[in-house]
Image (cartoon, rainbow, N blue to C red; front, side):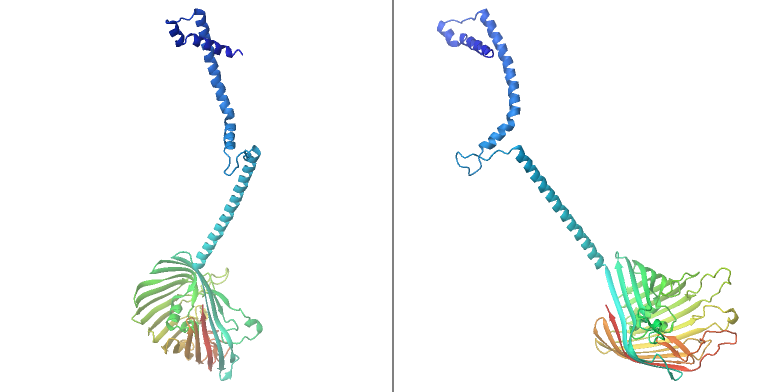
Length: 504
């Protein structure tokens, strides 16, 4: 009740000082000193009271703000609530916690969905990378399959190679991957004489004729194309000459090219290979090939004291083509001697090559020539230095005529003198003729007749050893007196068959 006392005094003072009272008396009423003092005291108490009220209002405002918000939410009835109906209960702390849990569960589910989506994105990225890798990778294959009847005689007698059968003479499968427009890598497997010893010789026992015998890595190289005039390959790759000769003749599935057929060149070897075009404009071109190799061929990755060199320079003009090349080296024989033994000395084998011809969409005609020195006589026998030197030469002429887009007639003739110094009478002659049908772009079927003759001895060619057999070879010289027991007979090889080339 003490709080009301100042209000009463203030009310009394205001009544005493009211203007209406003064007007009624006609003069200004003056308060007494004691009343004036009480009025001032009441005003001071009112000021203090107002300060306390202001402070209290601030506290009440702070405490009642949430409740006021809840009251407003309660007053705002949801749409459709009937008059007088109890509105929904204001959310409590428990419901707020439940809402928070639900929000957390939703967030967890969203995170799981995001992780799942990320996984799908990762799989997609891997699929895209795999697709890109596959787009830059190519797989190729080629098979030379034939069904033939062979008749072979040595010195007039029948040879075990005679007979009929199916033979897979060659099979290639390759993989090439391009990392960039300039960098790539390739590998090519070569299965040679899969069902026999040489391609037409029957195995003498079961162990020598195992299927799968003779599978080799023919190509395995990394390639960098720096310029149209410079492509670099490091590893086992095609040699400059034989690959060019095969492309010019374009009958590899029927018979090997001249040098490879008689063993005076390697189709591929391990080393550094350079190639390119100095000029290529329309039908005019000038190209080269250069190889620095081990010399033992792709089947023997030897380490030697020196490396061999093969080169080719070729050109084309209005359908005409020409090439010249050569070989220089020790053919992989220049190996380090065993400690404590006499160091071996080796000759250098050399070979020069020429090829030329004309090719159009209708006809093709060409020829090849080679001359070699000490090709099979690299190892020096000091006691027979003069007699063990040798030279060889040979030539090949070939032609074809396209009867239509699918039919072609072709023929070829080779003549080789493998031992011009040591066995001058030894001569090899080969005739090949046939008719080819190409029902599909990558399938060739050729009906072929071959006849090969060897006179004045024996010679190992791609068709086997032809000629009379002997324990001595044309290049074996045990004494300075000359060759011993060399046969002087002859051999013949006749084959009629269906030759196929299947590429993919």
